[in-house]
Image (cartoon, rainbow, N blue to C red):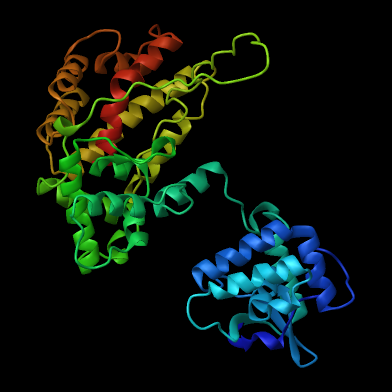
Length: 430
């Protein structure tokens, strides 16, 4: 395998591309790509221009003094038409590529980095692994919804709101902008999920930017963060993974620079807009049923670090196993989740306590309270759960595992999460 910067003029869009089958020549192949995929081709071209580069090197092989493209024909087509819009199949597409070319950042490249192979069997092997499914693990395994969500929350890419633009607008309005330019992409990576945004006091839930904490304390935190970014004190290398993001935010929290629980704003009641319709009213819509799992559908996940892989799997299982079918498994997993959350927090913050779950819950709750992550009311509730031998308590969790007779009903299981879910999330995330 070699990588070479090849002239665009020496690359040939494959007339026998497997996307469409045998065509007459390169021109016909380009026509067919747009006939079959015009909206996606235009979106790809727009993305290439916005980024000013092609990310995946096309796969090519030398053929008749030119390089025939075997993978990346759409990318090469877009680059060729950006280089010479007159080669586009229709007048409308010519106009489109002319406009895109004017938006290209800087000088348009004459060359494109490609992966060059000389063995057709090797090329077919690569294509097989890339484009024919997972093949039991041999080929690429497509991302499921959870994997896609993890990617968006790790990087901030794909979000509908530009977090960087929204924050800069707020700071500019208050004359709090740093003297240097704010790197939006790095700021977006730091605040890539609702968990991290919540720690600095903002949210983009419902596709709307808003403050979740008192405005001045949030602006003070954002001014510090953007100043660190703009000055180069905080870089992408510091924020490459969730551990780095958490480490930086923990430092700000320890310095008293992040909003606290006392700064939290009350939740605004949901607004209901009357829908206008020309149709006669029909029957009332069915109310969505309660979540079938212990961790309710839509609950925000902590941003997992490399040390939390096992507890992350437990969280995932509790968010997918139906309570009515797997009550005993859910009981065991809930106890494990509480124990591992508490143990991880104590190790992270160098807390010591006897190996008794009730005492350890108290130690973690006290630490969260001292750090202003929970208020006095919730701290007292956790203390009651810890001390009292009642239906929803640490003692009852022990009986869930060890008593041959104790088996709470499904709604009682849900009450465990209602009362302990916030504590568990905070212990895992802070």
